[in-house]
Every structure is written in structure tokens, then in C-alpha cells.
Amino acid sequence: MKNRRNGFHTLTRQVRLHGELVTCTALRIGAGRSYDALGDDLPVVKDTLDRPVIPGSSLKGALRAYAESLLRTLEPIVQSNGKPQLSCYPLTKPCLFNDKVAALKQEKDADDKLWEKSCWGCRLFGAPWLASQMLVKDLPVREDTWFERFGHRDGVSINRDKGTAQSQKRYTFELVPEETSFDFNLVVDGASDAELGLLLLTLEGINNGQILLGGARSRGLGDVVLNVEWDAVEEITPGNALEVLGNRAIGGDTPTTTWSTERRTGLISAFFHAIDLPGDMIARWQAARNHHREESE
Image (tube, rainbow, N blue to C red):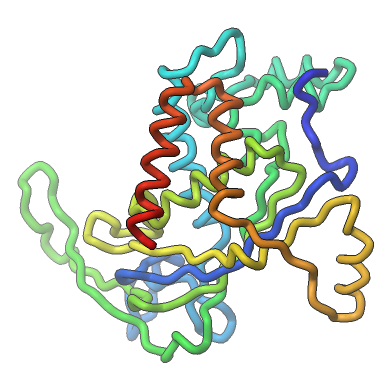
């Protein structure tokens, strides 16, 4: 097939990104309602040592939502020419309905056909019929930025009909303070250059202020920045897999490579070309990117 997916049957390429996620404002990722008489009504997620942690699913969900909105923005610009839509609506209008999935699974090369008929969002982030290529690990807090102090705020329920506060509906919620850092680890298996480009374009949305995490975002919470260690990217291929596994077995350092700005720009450009984005738009994007880079230097 022309666009055969890499899949997980063999190791073709595994990319591991590491870094830190830093809160610019207070952060609230809730753990549900608490009935502790002395604690907050709405605590944050914590580990077994009572330290804050960001679930990988929370970050992955925010990344997917942004990626899908980005893909839908580009959808009217590109010509589909019979190709699957760039992004479906997973809950209301998925790429494939159950009967179609069941029928495709009976055909030869079912995995490849399911991949071909899936949108870009489902290919990268997964769907009920397609395993996700991306794994986001839970983000533990960095000890040097954690001083065992949570923030606290008050809230009150609003009567939407009257536009006033409801009687006896006051509550308190817990916060992670600003300037708290969390370890970031993301793994991508079997992704093409274009799919990696979509991922990089999505990650840039964090530092562009387009992706906020947690609850109470309309109150100013959830602004974060992501600092990826681009000079220490783990890229595992059939050519170096034995070396990597050998080093890990003896507790040695895993070989890493540098993903320069040019390399990352090239991967994002590969995604733009894969969706047939007009060349003049790609050129304008590259010019704006180069201008921003020159200003920052």
C-alpha cells in the first residue's frame, strides 16, 4: 500500500522527549470532591507522599484537543481529494463507526486499512480501533521546586438565571503554586516524519499560550511553559536498538541526539506537505518562524 502505517509489529522508530513543565500561574487538576471536614472541598491530584502530580492523561487530553482544533482550522484550506478528513469529532462524528470498523477487520491488511481511513488526530492520539502512537507519562513534581505548600482559594456557585451567588454554596479549592516544575516524558512509537511534525506543532501550542491545563482556566489558572531538552532526544531505530537496550541493561546512559531548530522545522514542514497545504502558506510560515528566531537571538 502507498501509505502503509509503521505500526507496532516491529521497531521502526521510537522517539523519547524529556524536559520540564513549569507553572506560570497556579494550577488546579482536581481529584474529585473531598468530604474531609478540615481540608479543601476540591483537592488536587497527589501521589502517595502527598506531593502534586499531573496525570499524563490530563496533558495528553489537552494536547489532543488543541491538535484537533488546529487540524479543523486547516481543513477548509487543503483539498481532500478523497482523503480522510484531517480531524473527526470523536464523540459525535468519528472517522469510522462500529459497523465499518467490524467490516474492515474482516479484510486483508485490516490494520493498514483502518489507519488509512482514520484522521490525523486518531492516528497520532488513538481511537477505539487504533492504538495511540503517543504515550505521555505522569508528571511528578521536581523536589527542588516543591516546598510542601499548596495554595487555596474560595469559590461560590452562581445562579445562572438570577446572575447572583447561590445561598450556602461557598466552597474552597486547592492549588499548586506558580513556578512549580514537573518532569516531562513523552514517547512516540512508529510515527512518520509528518506525524512527528504534527506532534511538534501541537507542543508549540503550550508555549504560545494556546494550551492551558487543569480546571478554573477562565479564572486565570493553568498557564504553563514546556522546556524540552532538544539536545538530548532519544531516537531508537533498528540500527541502534541493541546498543540502547545494552546500555539500559547495565544502567548506562542512553545514546541521544540533538534535534536542532532546523530539524524540527523540517518535520513540521513534512506534515504541511503531507496534508497538501499550499506552498505559499508554508513559505509564509517558514518566513515568520525565521523572523521570530532572529529576533529571539
